[in-house]
Amino acid sequence: MFKELEVTGTGVGLTFLGLVILTIGLIIYFKRRYRSYGFQELLDINKNVKVQSLSERTKFPEVDVFKNTGTFFNFGMTAAVAIALVAMSWTTFEKKIDVNLNDLILEDEVEVEIPRTAEPPPPPPPPPPPVIEEVPDTEVIEEDQPVFENQEVTEETKVEAPVAVKAPPPPPPPPPPAPVEEEIFKVVEQMPRFPGCEDKATEKEKEDCAKGKMLEYIYKNLKYPAIARENGVEGQVVLQFVVDKDGSIADTKIVRDIGAGCGAAAEIVVNGMNNMGKKWTPGKQRGRPVRVLYTLPVKFKLEG
Image: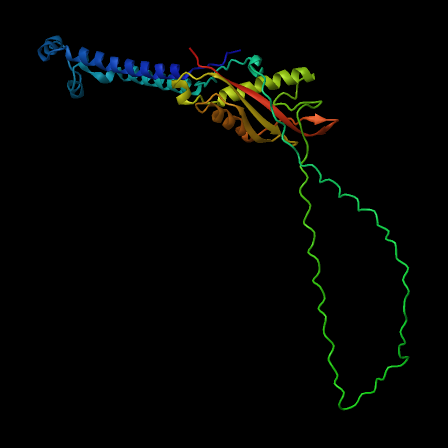
């Protein structure tokens, strides 16, 4: 079996440069070769040559470039095949990223405050007990009331229209209940994992693989701020974010920053995880997905 040809960008450039130099060298060589003959020298060389036809008088054989047409054609075909082969074998190699799981260890303890979820309102207080008041013994004096009332209506009787009593407006509707926020866990039975390692056999292998891929993603996409590089700023930035039940990233927060734009650069990379195409494997508690608070240290270190 033939091994697949792999050529880097540098190799492609060197191949093109070599072909250009070789072509220029051939042009210079043949120019000097044909110009080395003088006209009188050519006449002396060919004075005893018998010409068979008039067409052969147009050029002397020693300076006839057309006799090298086959050589030039073969060189051009070889150069074209070489260029095509190198161009098709141009391989782009990804930069190898040194992944060390120790970078995920917090250098100093960071107190991470868990976001508080909305608590239900307290129940209303019980009504006060009824107060029993003692009714004093009073004597009710009954007045003599007429048994019948004269209801006779005459022309002089004034009849007053009844006063319309307006009904009180209906009470306003009760306000809608506040949305219930789901609880955010800090530690669960199965912690959330970076995607790409669900084919591993054991949970330990999945966890280690997910951490390694997460570091590869971070260090591949992390841009060291120019101001931090110029001032030699190094250290560890600590971020906090929530892995939702669907594996998306939310509520990213910089817990500890070393300045010079490093915290913002790390935050951009973490928020970019929502655009990877694959989402995190959500954390689970008692077999159901839950929202989990994740703490991620990102190490900034200058090379060299």
